Length: 225
Image 1 (cartoon, rainbow, N blue to C red):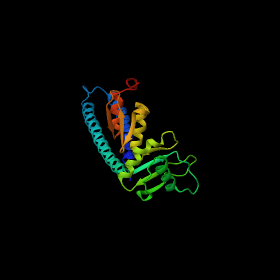
Image 2: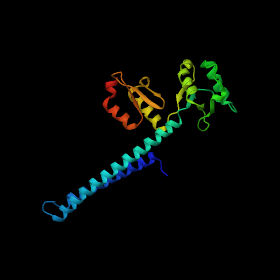
Image 3: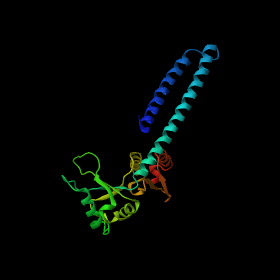
Image 4: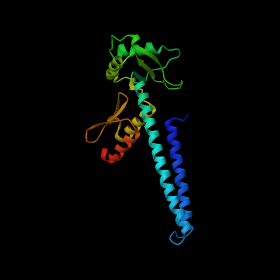
């Protein structure tokens, strides 16, 4: 079964193909003769525009429904990642003990001295092995230790280690696009939501690309700089 993103891409491709065909058909229709003097062409033109309107409305409704489905699935996936954090910049060794490494960072560098290993549900490198060190995914047993670790990440300032939320692909794409437009220091994530500091110093939370695009239209890069 195709994902909502793939379905959305298919709808966009179908819409583009339909538009191209309609433009070609409309051009041929106009070349067939004056609609005012040719009853056949006049009737065909009326049916064409009715059909064209119907197709565009149908595609719009379908696209909206897929967007709703995609946003719903993204919210569910974000909810399932609430107890998870990613630790970046930690050297990757062969046959390493990822949990031991994380415990050292948490207790020694982040000063969480009372932290216990059984507070971590799972701990492992994320993705397939590559030349650069992969981030370590840490899933906590509940939100309390996760929140403490998240707040304590400032203790890692000046080191090569950084801590980020485990965003879904959709929200990671939003995060990257927001930083590119508004600036790295004006965008961050909190509880899986992308937060943007706007030029008027207000903060807005963004969870969908359509919300971000509206803000990018409202605040151009010229206004931000």
